Image 1: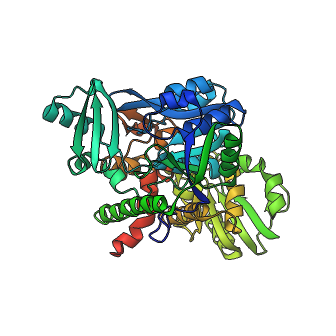
Image 2 (image 1 turned 180 degrees about the horizontal axis):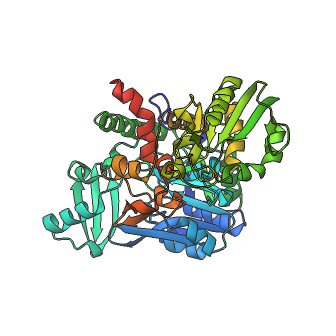
Image 3 (image 1 turned 90 degrees about the horizontal axis):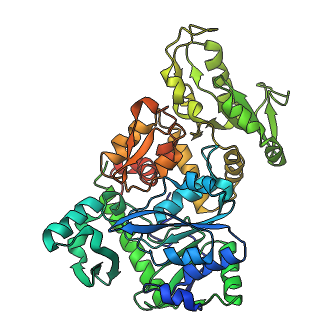
Length: 278
Length: 231
């Protein structure tokens, strides 16, 4: 059975923390959350735990592309792309070999965390770069949009040029689309019909296959919620805090409840949509 | 210590050759019997048996060996794409030297019941080490999930890029994560406007893309329950 179940919607985990960066350069770059993931990854790069961080970055509008950071400075350039609109990992193998990377931390969505964990633990191919996968970070995800239909909708209904979109974020039940200097606020009910069907059948909100899951809490919007799932994640978090990159504390029960409710909602939604597909 | 049999029933030898690389790690965990080690025996019982290569049903000797291994093994693992889903050997039409009568190759599950089927052409052999660890009870719910997936694949007679296109891409379940493109050993899949597209003539029917796809794996595992009306 899938590791997300009604009695365990967050999967197996060790601890839930609230964290935030202590670095001024990350504070300046961050786009609303606590910057803890960026700070942890910076620590991992600076201390040589990994020699690269693989993530996605916004290319323009709602399209994304693979981004490889080899240093803290390069990582700052891709920081803040937490709403990984269209995951793009098909070029990962070529990118890792081209750059001569040996130990990478990979940042993705729950679906990506699943197959990257599979590549690491049950590599189906000789060409799998399992030995290079050192650490997996998954961002909380409620789903991604069917890009073309959603962009067409925004253009036809609101006259927004796709190339002007600089960001999208959830704010309660409102989806905020930043374009140019303005922000369009859409009711989530209007936007949900543009979500990908595959995302509507996905039961995983937090990314149970990752070493570390990260996301936001509405109760503490200026901090990052971190869920550790491995001893290594616990150790690296402690080390990064001792080195002055970030600070963290146990999350209050209310935060865990909030995430659990979202995870349960996504699980129920997945069951509903899956039941339509025999 | 458990006993493991490794047996190749014919094919390109890629799978048995790759397993040689992890023999030291395997022998730390189980007692291995194989042709490569010179201690092959089909007259004793095994805890695990790994069969590589597909079943040539034109060759009675092969099918009888597979049946014998099934009788002797508590857990039977079809290892590699040919053994698990037929792979490229499905394209065989016969007429080739040295055995022109060999023309029909099928997955092992077409001859006997298989417990776990692992696609891959060939799989990275560290998979076999981790699989045995998982079967011995190590790993948490994440490992168990993939054990149940490999068990489910053993019930499938075919998995290929064609199935991926039909079941996931054309049915709108694809999320465009790129796992299939990243996993195709034949470069038969490529992204077109954010979704994978198949170049049919390149697909070797290895099934790797299907077992990597987060949505296909979910569908495979849920389908038996869904078809019984259980949500």
